[in-house]
Length: 163
Image 1: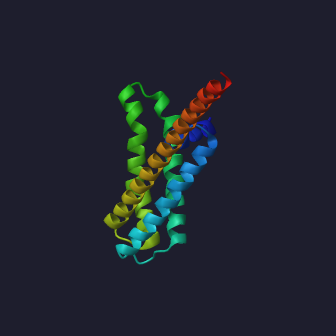
Image 2: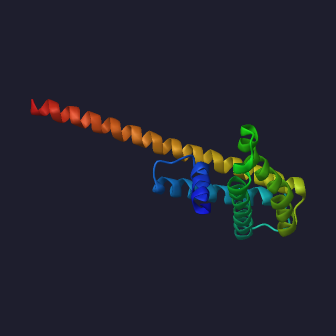
Image 3: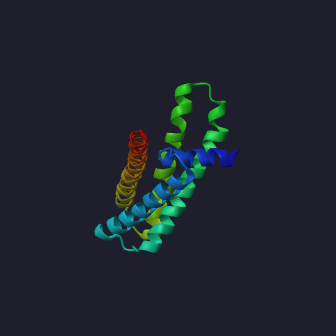
């Protein structure tokens, strides 16, 4: 049950891709962009402890904490709630609370950054990763449309040649 909900959440974060390979590619692109932007923003804003490895480790820990907390809330708290609005909003509120109370202070502790500095770096890097995920999914969709149109054109050409 936990694995199924975890898979659904990760699939949703990847933009509901058409295949597993597309999901892996899209998530890999998003993770790489998130780490690179996070590391670059930390160095630009003057965070004392920066580096690509440290940024990757901190972001990995943050992602694990956020995803596990949201999946846990969806599995054990949401089914017992009677209000539909509360059921829909509780995972988002949980993610925001975990972000502000656990993840950002973790960044501050590990990278010796100020709270707002860590919040800004994380928010901008997640926005950049989201943009890349959206663009990658759009590219996959466009490639699928082009492939189907080429197939249609090829079948019409083949039918015309047969006549």
